[in-house]
Amino acid sequence: MDLSELAAFLKSRRARIRPSDVGLPAGPRRRVPGLRREEVAQLAGLSVDYYTELERGRGTQPSAQVLAALARALRLGGDERDHLFHLADRPVPPASGGLTAHITPGLLALLDRLAATPAQIITDLHETLVQNEAAIALVGRQPTGRGVKASFIHRWFTDPASRALYPSDEHPHQSRAFVADLRAVAARRGRDAEVDGLVGVLRRRSEEFAALWDTHDVGLRRSDHKRIAHPALGVIAADCNSLFSEDGRQRLLWFTAPPGTEAAAQLELLSVIGTQDVTPPPAEVGGFSLRRVSVATDQPGP
Figure (cartoon, rainbow, N blue to C red):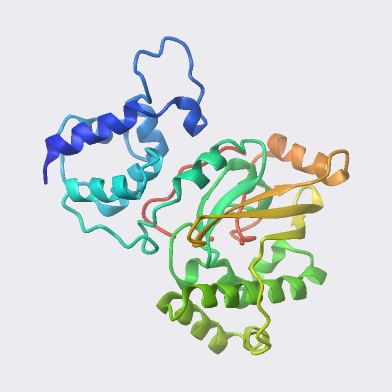
């Protein structure tokens, strides 16, 4: 491991990012051209002391999870992310899998600009990668990570508590939409172990899923009208839109409502209510929520 090269690379990437690029205020008396060390540490979910040691070329070899968090915080592109792993003498993870899944920088940059709009980034298997605070206030904090159990589709068909996010009369529509979306993803990916594993588990554990899968309905969830059962504000009728990454493996989801409607007023109230004690238990909606929150780096949430 080349600690000096790793330190120099981190410094160079930090210097090129403006606070506004990551949703932070510039503030007065800023003496560095880019982010401060403490800001990078905050964005990556690391201690300031630990990150400072890395930039000084000291300390222990960073884990793959730490490297992935730094890649997200510093908005590294794919080649830069791989270079970071090489410098730390860690195996470069596949572009699409594992706890080190690399969030598409473009989607992450857009998420940072949706401060007052519930939004989140998910994978095509509905695994939550990152939420903003507004999304958490709307749909609850989702478990972040990868794997069958991290998929909201898996929870939807195996955990009845996850369905509390929607009024009961919405459940049939949501079930059909989730299955049609998953079949479209399966076709896009081809023979894929992740998709086959999720489908196999759900066919065994859910008769509802098995019956819907056998209809062969197919359709990506590009946009949808959702009625979300919020514990404090009641049912919120919101429009959910999706922006897909170039390879289709990740999606930025955000919730809006027409101006002047009751739903628009309810969404505005989310910033006041925040994430107090009224948020629903972990449940997902394909993915969303006010400012960006830190991304979990060591675990796996529509």
